[in-house]
Image (cartoon, rainbow over all chains, first blue to last red):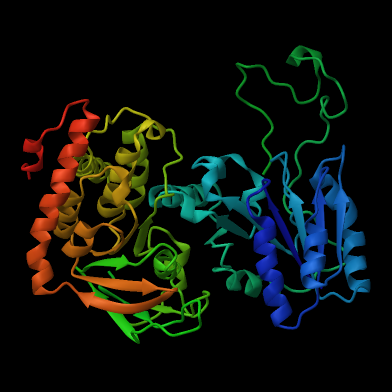
Length: 233
Length: 260
C-alpha cells in the first residue's frame, strides 16, 4: 500500500490536486482509496466517491486537533483501505494549528499552498511545510510574476529540503511528477512513525486553564520580555 | 536565453485543426492575438504559459528553441521564460512599492547595488506608462489600476527579464500604449498581446486571428496597413485627448478634433 498525506490551509486546492492524481491513478489501472480528516464539515469524500467510484471515508475531529485525530485513525484507515482492495491511500487533512505536521515516515507528505495567500505565508506555516516532501503551489495565475518568485524563494528559505512544484489545478498541469513520486515510495509498514518531533504536549491552556497572563500558568511560560521559548520543528 | 518559441497546431472547440501547422515567433517580434470574445485568444496564451505539450484541451504543443520546455523551467519561476500579465493579475502585497521591488529584485540580482539599480529602472519604466507617477512609498495595494498595470509590465520586463511577455487585454487599464510599445520594442523580447485595440494590432509585426477556439489565420502587417497605422494612431490620440479633457473636468470643442 502506497500512502500520500495532503495537508494545507482550507480552500488552497488540496482536493483539486487529489482529483487530478486520482484520474492518473485510474488511468494506470491502480485502485485508490481516499480518507478526509476535517474538523466539522467536509463533503469531498462523497464527491470523489461519486466521481471515481472508489472507497472513501471521512472523519470529523471535532474538539480534537485534526493532526491528533490523524495519528489515532491512520492505522485503522490503512487496514480499511487494504480490506477495500486499494493499492494507494490518499489522506487529505486540514492542517490547522501549525505546530505539528500530519506526515509519517514511509509515506509521501505534500503541503498544498496557494500563491494568493501572501508572500509571508511560507514563513508562517512551520512543520506543515518544513516536514513535507513536496510543496505544491496553486493559484499561480492570480498573482504577479514578482510575487510568484518571492513566494517560491520564501518556501526555499523556510524549507530548503522541500521540493517546490507549481501546478495548475484547473488543467491538471504539473501533476504527473507528483504521481511518480507517490508511486516511487516503498509500501508503508505497519509500524509507522510520525515525522519530526511533536510540540510540547504539557500545556496548561490545552488542558483547560483559561486565565490570561503567564503568572497563572506553569510548564512552558513566557513573559513579553523573555525571548527564549520552546522550539519544535 | 530562449530566442524562439513555436506553436505546433492543435484543435479548436469544433475539433477542427489550427490553420497553421507550426508558427515560429522570434526574439524582437511583437505579435497580436485578435478575434471576437470567446474565440479562444486567452486559451491560446494559456497554452503558451502552461508550456502545453499536447496535455491541454487544445492539444497544442509549445516549443522553446525547437524543444519542449524543461521541467525545471516550469518549477522555478525565476527560470520561467514567460511572464503573463492578465486583466486579473494583481499585486496582493501591501508592502511599500520600493520595498516590494527590492524584495523581488534581490532574488534576481547578484548584489544589493544591482538590485537597487533594477528597482530604479523599473520605476522609471512604469512612470512613463502611467498618467500619475508612482509614489515609491505608497503601499502596493494603494496603486491605481493604471499604475498597477504599468508596474506589472515594468517588473516583468526589467526585473524578471523574461524573453517572452504575454499581455492579455491590458490596454483597457489606463496606460500609455504608444509609449508602452516604444519602450517594449527597445527591450528586445517576444511580446504577445491579446488585444481588441486597432492601434496595438497595427503596430504589431503580425496578428494571429482566432475563431471558434482555433487559429484561422496569421496576417503579417502589410505595407498598406503600415501606412494606415499613423492615421489610426492620430484618431486614437484624438480620442485620448478628448478623454483626458473630459476626465479633467474641461469642456471640449471642435478645435479638439484637430488635435493629434
